[in-house]
Length: 71
Image (tube, rainbow, N blue to C red; front, side, top):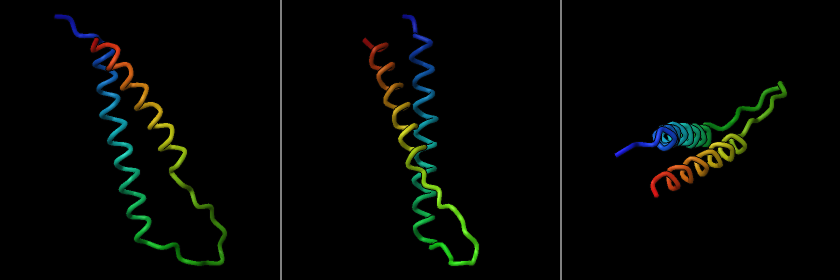
C-alpha cells in the first residue's frame, strides 16, 4: 500500500487551516465582548473577512485533493 505524499500534505494543511480559522473565530468572539473605546484618534477597524475567505478557499482546495487521492 502506497501513501500519496500529496494527500498527506493536504491533510496536514487542512489541520493547519482549521486551527487558523478557529483562532480567527475566537478573536472575533473576544472582540465582540470588548467594545471599541472612543478617542480623538482616528483608526481603522480591520476585519478578518478576507482572511477567512482565503483560508476557506484553501481548505476546500485541500479537501478536493484528499478526495481525489482517496479514490
